[in-house]
Image (cartoon, rainbow, N blue to C red):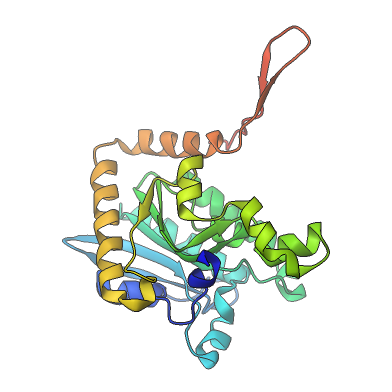
Length: 276
């Protein structure tokens, strides 16, 4: 049920939340290398009384809009655009707000030939190196590396009917059972819901939605999202920039880390080093 609500065609998209929460939004386009990707929207605006930079996936709602925005599945130029905007935020000391809503990065041959994996990895690294406050909010589907590319944040928030997972239930079922019909079993195993991910420590806050889902009252849903973002920024403002970055890196190092003793009983921990 949660997966269905997360994918609901009338669910508020990134542009909807921008219209409710960001005043004077000025969109910035292009990756300054190849093209603009409509699947990623980003720009500058005012959140309350402070200037912020906003980046998010945009799915569209009607079939024509979804086609234009490629159903929120970004290509390499979309992630390069995000990197350019993150650099702008760092230069001007602007907090970064991201909105995650994608089934995953675009899996087409052209995207792979254009360096899709590298673009995603470099976007994640760019976010990891920011010293400004970064708050990510999962507002619909949070699928695979395409979602994580915009979610290397100090605080990851998630609406209660959103999903966040390494793969879609259908994709998981097709791999494990060779039958997409096993998607419900895959969803149960993936534990992609907000409450489950909160228990696992993957996200910091579950944002309440109107009864039946955010699409039933987008304005009320946006108000709740705004409150959560405001509270997260207030916490992060109390932390020095360098320490913020260190804490962000440590946050992600803890996720999925494992440890086991060697023959002598010494614990060996698999925690990656993100570099300078």
